[in-house]
Image 1 (cartoon, rainbow, N blue to C red):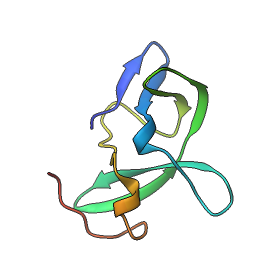
Image 2 (cartoon, rainbow, N blue to C red):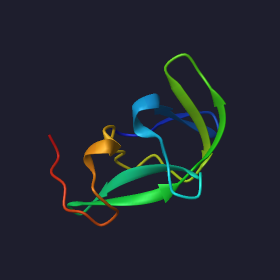
Image 3 (cartoon, rainbow, N blue to C red):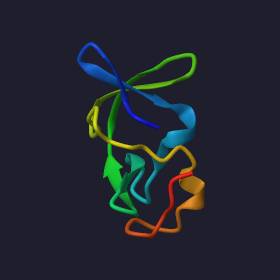
Amino acid sequence: IHVRRDGGAFFLPYSALILDASGQETVYLWQQGRAVSRPVECLSHMENGYVALSGVSESDLVITNPASVPASGALVQLE
């Protein structure tokens, strides 16, 4: 999905967010055919997702099924 901006924050669906090994909230972004992990800072939980203050930008393509990504840097295809 494309990241949706609302004021100074960004909306991310619940399905996009995972916790890494250290407990950091993280998303996978699609970059040139690869999944790249990126830590995010979430401000609050909404009905359909999270409000992120940092870690993503409007031009990012967020992978909404991170469980399907074996590791950061893995090759992925857009569907």
